[in-house]
Image 1 (tube, rainbow, N blue to C red):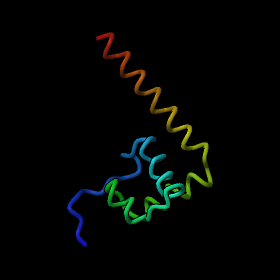
Image 2 (image 1 turned 180 degrees about the vertical axis):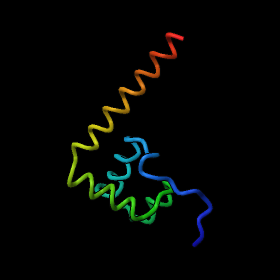
Image 3 (image 1 turned 90 degrees about the vertical axis):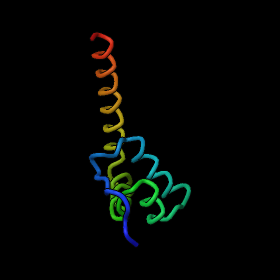
Length: 81
C-alpha cells in the first residue's frame, strides 16, 4: 500500500492526540495499523507511544501541562497586542 500523505513525527503530535491514540489502542482495542492510518503516522510510532505511556505515564501529563501553558501564553500575548 502506498501512502498518499506525509508522515507526521512524534514532535508534531499534540498531547491530546497522543492520549487519544493510547486510548484507542488500550481501551477500544483498535489495531495499530488502523490507528496509524487514521492519524497519518507510522505503526511503529503507535507502538512507541503506547509503550511510552505504560512505562512513563508522567511524561504524558507533563506534555499536556506544557501545551496548556503554551496555549495560555499565546492567548495572553494575542490579547495584549
